[in-house]
Image 1 (cartoon, rainbow, N blue to C red):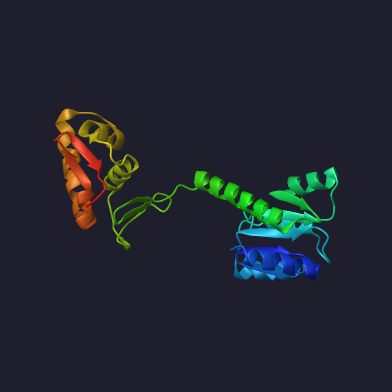
Image 2 (spheres, helix red, strand yellow):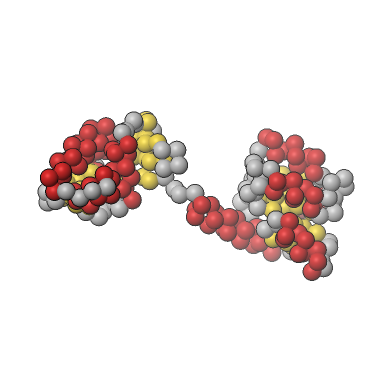
Length: 227
C-alpha cells in the first residue's frame, strides 16, 4: 500500500491511478489529518508527501512521522513545487528518503518509488535476520521459537543452540568436537556422547523432520536437504 498526500485533487487522482495501474495498492489524502486517520488503520509501504499542504505542512508531518516509533521507518518521498537546494536539504535532513520536484513524469515517479522500496528492503534484510528454514522446521531467532509444520516445539537451550548451528551451516559436516566447542564451550573427546544424546532428543522432538539431521560417517552431523 502506498499513500499519496496531495491537496491538488487532479495530481492526487493521477498519481493514485498510475500506482494502481502499475501493480501497487494506493490511496490518496488531501491533508495531514486524513493521513493520520488512515495510519491508525493501516501502515503503508511508502508515503508520497506534498510539502505545501493546507493546515499542517509536509515537513511538519514528516517530523511527526519520524518521531513516532510505529511510523519512523516508513519510507517517505517528498513531492513539491519548491525546488531550491535549500528546500531539498531541509527535506532530506528531516528524514525524507527522496525528493521529487514538480512537475514530474509518472514513469519517473514509479521508478523512484521502486528504487526507494528496494533500498528499504535491503536495509531490512540486513537489520532483521530471516527465519531459518529446513523442511517443515522454522526457527525465529528473534522470538527464540521453533515451529515444525506450523506447530510450536519446545526445546531445551542446548537443543535449540544445536539446531540453530546446524541450520546456519546447512550441508556442512560439523564434527562432535566442533559442536562441543561451540555449544558447550569445551572440546573433550570423552564427552562426545553428550552431543549424541542431545541430537537424539532433538530428532525426537522434531518428528519426521528430525531425519534432516544426518549422521555422517560416525564423526559428526549435518543438516540435510530432504527428509
